[in-house]
Every structure is written in structure tokens, then in C-alpha cells.
Length: 433
Ligand code: ADP
Image (cartoon, rainbow, N blue to C red; front, top):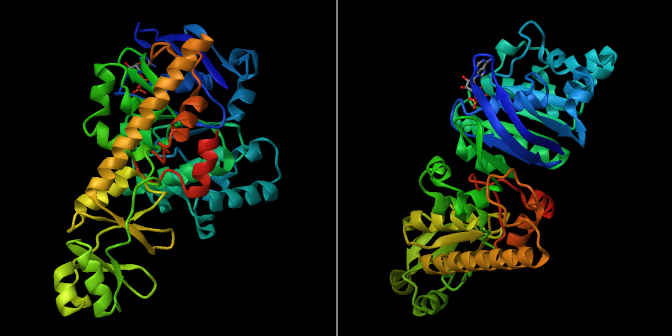
């Protein structure tokens, strides 16, 4: 655990970059520092590895003041990734990644073997090993930066706007890759960004900072979205907060129906039966149960199916894995207003109406509120400081308890804003923390 205790940084010219900041950064999870430019994020990150020293306050790593250990040993325990990767241009990719192991005295063969292993881990093809940084794309260079930071297997990773310089699609891929690596390695990651969507997608905990180096709120992303501490946080979160929050509600409890689902080779009797149940459209599936498209029910009942003339089924959502936001998105974009639910192999498991999705959303909100009430009641009963004001640095706050509570309540957080934060196995692992 990294504990920042009432830290202030005043630069020689009098600028107060960080003002009495207190934060508890839990082990094995991603803590994001987010806020507008100049609010003190980088200064905070650099104080953790002593590239900058605080003017007041102290920082503890596993209970020990970081000034009490040699600065080189401290930095070796913390991988550091920056924007544009900061690679050594005159060294090959494999040698860039092997830098820290070589500094630690590993022989060349062992250091290179480790570098090759890390290239695979961060999704880089081994054929790139002998290239120089300028021969790689921006996204590939960032992956090298992550691999280099991981080379000596440090318990902590400090990441300063690592993905900000690449285009949104590459950035999305890098974020997904980081989450995948984190599922495997469980590092303590402190991640700086000015992008609130990135913060919500990546963070287990998010510290929103405001200009003047003050902490505005420190909370899990779903709590930020549901209960911003003040107007500044609300403005910073931007529009669509309610919709984005739906990303934290799983689709497992959503009521699906298979009544309007028919195979392409359905006979006239089956089509007539399905149409008689009243749906305006039937969802037609292929021989494997995969969606082909929608057919108007009346027409199908009278004239049979014309699979060449089906309405597009749109992008389906994966039942149980995708969020209610994904399901709603599918329904809104569907030409029939119905969302198509598939399993992990892409086979149709049912369809959901917009009404069913609305009911599921209401249910998820109600369960979440109930869980919050139960939590406050418990907090009041045991005299804990759970009700502490947001922004107090998380003192006494049980992060795990909050996450687990939401899940027990059936809210089933699935991910950050991106909708794919967790795979099903990883999701369970993250949720269990
Ligand atoms: P952020 O990472 O949130 O953009 P920084 O931590 O880089 O913010 O900077 C916080 C504030 O401190 C800014 O006003 C910045 O101009 C100032 N600052 C940063 N480094 C120095 C420095 N070396 N000397 C003086 N002021 C600095």
C-alpha cells in the first residue's frame, strides 16, 4: 500500500502544485489520478518515486517512509511509463526492454530472454525485437514502454499519460491490453490521465484532482458516476453520466424471451404459431442458431420467410457479460427496437424489448440504493467512518466492501465505460478483490 499523508508540493517559484493531498493507494489495483492540466497529477506521481520531493507531508510504502530507503532501490521497485514511451532511440527494442535487468547485473542472455517473454506479454511480435524505436508505430512503442517498466517485475507501476499521444482506436487497444496484463500480474498501478473516460475504464479507484493540487473526490468509478462530490466533479464527468453508469450494471438478470426467435427453415405452422403470439417481428437464425435478421411477423406467417429480405439484426450483446448499457445500445440501434442477446459463441439466447431493459435498469438502481442504505446502516451501527466526506482521502473507506456490495445486490458491475473491462474469468477475479 502506498499512503500519501497530507502532502504539499510548493515549487521554488511559489507555485503550489499539490495541496495537502492524502490518498491510500491499495495494493494490486489500478488507482487513477485524473483532472485538468496543471492540477498536480504528474507532480504527485513523481513524488511517489522521489523524482520530486514533497515540501510537507510524507509518503509511505508498505508502512515505511519512502525517504528512508535508498532512492535507487525505491525506483527499481517502481516501473515508470511516460507519454511517447521515452525509449532509447539508439537501442533495439529487445535491449530497451532489457535495460533494467542489465542494470541489475543480469547476463545478456537472461535479460534478453526476459525481454522476449515480455514482448509476448504486451502483444508485440517477436520479429520486432531487433528493430529500433523509430521503426515502430506509436502504439507499439507504448507497448515497449510498458514491457520495459515490467522487466524487473516491480510491484508498482507508475504511468504518466502513457496512452495520450496515440489515436483513440490504438488507445482503446492499449487500455484493454493493460487491463489484461493487470488481471495476470496484479500490480499496484498509479495511472495519470486527463481523460475521464480512460480513468473510469481503467481505475479500480479514481482520484479526481482540481486546479491548485486539491483532491476533489476519491472513489470507485461507479460511485463517482452515481454520486459526484460536488459541481466540479460533476462538470468534469461531463454529459451522459447516467448512461455511462449503466456500464456498471450487468445484463445477467435481464428478462429475455425466445418466443419470436425462429430458425430460417421453420415451417409454415411454426411461423404462424410464433406470429400468433403477437410480436411485430420474428428474429430469424441460421442452422447454428446465429442471428440472420428480422422478418415482419404477419408477412412471415402468410408468405413464409424470405431470408434475402430480412432487416439487419444489428450488433447483438452478450448476455451476462455485457452491461445493461450495451443491451440498451443494441435495442436503440435495432430497426425493431429489440436487442438480440447471444452467448459467448454468438448463438442467440433470446431477445429483449426496450421495456424489459427499462425494467432491468430500474431493478438494478433499486438494488444498488438498497445496498447503499444497508451499508450506511451498518456503518452507523458499528461506528465506522464509512460516512466520511468524499475527498478525505479515503480514510476508513472499504473499497472492496463497496464493490462487493454492489455485486451482492445484483448490480453486477461489469466494467468501466468501455464495456469490456473484464472478461468473464477476469471479471470474477477483479470482483472478488
Ligand atoms: P498535471 O500533471 O496535472 O498537468 P503538474 O503536476 O505537471 O500538473 O503541474 C502542477 C502545477 O505545478 C502546474 O501549475 C505547473 O505549471 C507547476 N509546475 C510543475 N512543475 C514545475 C516546476 N518544476 N517549477 C514550477 N512549477 C511547476
